[in-house]
Image (cartoon, rainbow, N blue to C red; front, side, top):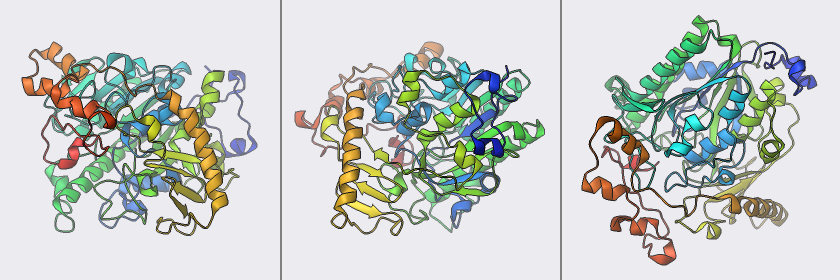
Length: 520
């Protein structure tokens, strides 16, 4: 197949890219996306962190185009859904990280499906978190190679379908590999990169490009890593943060290992390497948050702004900064344009992202203003319609309207310290109107709000089918939505929720050492 590669910058600048395969040039680029979990913008030495050391990610950033005002969703599953579909997660049914509300609509075309239909062989290594039931698994969503854990984190258990293999841990985890569990050896992040490297080695000589989606669950809690990493910064920071930074440095070493392999195989110039993270900062925000307010699960800048780097030596500009408003929604349309994908009218019209190709050619290229909506979701079950202004923001290049109560001028107040809502009624009116229109479109698409739930986590059920055994009564009760202990967890606030509108956390099956481990 003669299909489109990412053209030289001069061609990009002239717009010399067409949809027709007859006009394409060369071989499609390989694509690698690496997206760690719960790592914020300020958690790299390149972005100013005074303690952590990330030389390999720093080198990647210096060698590529850096998107400095790049945003994702405020939590895990929502970001993954938006990246996979090129539109806000709510419009594909994902409004939470549990309670079946993490399931991406089967009607959504995914990035992997689009790439596979264009000639790619595709693989995922790490965290999926867009549905644990068989119909929602990656092998049904465009991935040829599947090597994943369940739920939002290794060892987790939630009511209904969201849950990992029983008693799983970060060391020597059981991983679902193409429908069968495998007992692995080693630390989880190393395991995921090991498998991705083996898979790339196995497919690199085929007459097809590859897409490797590498999504380690680190540095998500529980904060755990090999001792040599965990102890590196003891004495400078507390034990928990030291482990968190150790998890990041382990990710960095693995990024370096993967990059070295691509160089050894003469694939570096043929591979588009994208690095980003899935939400704002967590355990490291008190150490360094790049001057931003908030972190994961907040509608402020610190909840959604992350480092994103595109790198392809000889094709994408090195050491370039893009300062305009960009987002995870843009990755799908960017890759679609790069490969000349044939999108249906339904998919094309549903995209909310923009192609980043003009900015990859010229970091200062004209970029019309836009609005970007953040909503943390997570309202009590069945209460979507009443949560419109709870935990939300809508922003453009200059202003951010948060919770319909605070307005910030991001040009002069990037830390979002001064509320100027009374001073700019015209700005507020425009942002409110845009948000009203967006919400009216999104609300009817939230298809998972009150769906039925299975009595057992599918990953555990599959594990017991393969290895034998079954749940004890305590674990069975934790999974079963009809269990009395889960009644308050599932009912809307006006029918018995006594938790002030906050969704209770049923906990982590692995009984981790970190309280934060129960948060997906």
